[in-house]
Image 1 (tube, rainbow, N blue to C red):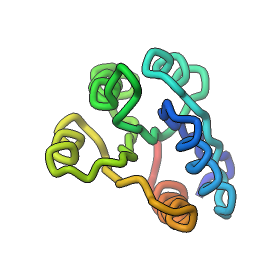
Image 2 (cartoon, helix red, strand yellow; image 1 turned 90 degrees about the horizontal axis):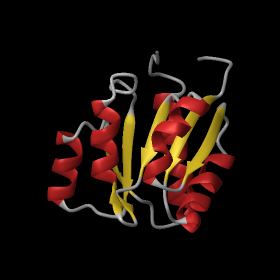
Image 3 (tube, rainbow, N blue to C red; image 1 turned 45 degrees about the horizontal axis):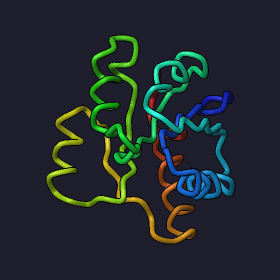
Image 4 (cartoon, rainbow, N blue to C red; image 1 turned 60 degrees about the vertical axis):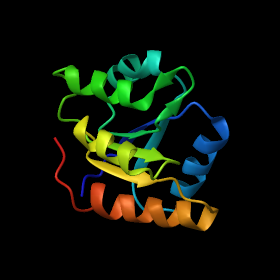
Length: 135
């Protein structure tokens, strides 16, 4: 496990949803640092400026779609291998299939309670921070 914090870009247009994600990670005993990207047009800028190692991506971003953002990330060779986890309120089979086809590394339905956000954050860190080998 690295001593440097895992830098996570959370692409989420809803400040309440971002707050829930942030609170979920606050109780986790893992070195993580979250950065909020509220709009699709700032994704590349923030990935470059923050040197994020992983992305949590909402599918509903106002006028832009998360699928478009995912395709944009995958089309840029600098970010093509960057792990992207879709965090969406949709569990529709079509959305899930499209997410994986567009290059998502995982697709997670947004938790419904704060305790489930904490459980998600613990599981996320157990794998992505403690186990996965990152570049």
